[in-house]
Amino acid sequence: MTRTILQRRLVDVSDRLKRLRAELAVTEEQVAFLEGEAEEFRLRALVSETPLADAEARDARQQADTMTRYRDGLLVQIGRLQQELDELLDRMAAELAGP
Image (cartoon, rainbow, N blue to C red; front, top):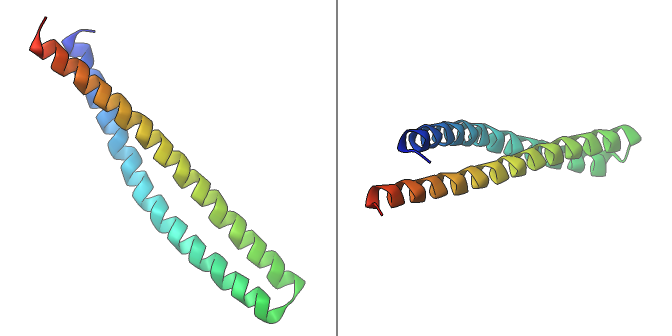
């Protein structure tokens, strides 16, 4: 792989990592909010013991779980990109070291 291609790929992977990390930060905040909301609805359902409150608690829990799965997916993507970045850096270092 030529040095120019390596440099472009490094920049591309680095940019994607930055975007995903920014998205992860927002998602973490959303997960925290939705988890708090789900807990609040769960407590309301326990106190009121109505079918409507139970449904609201289930809906809130589903939203929190969905956002948690999304966050976990972002973490996997970030891990893969970080691994790719490390491999690209290793290749570049090997090229700079020469034969």
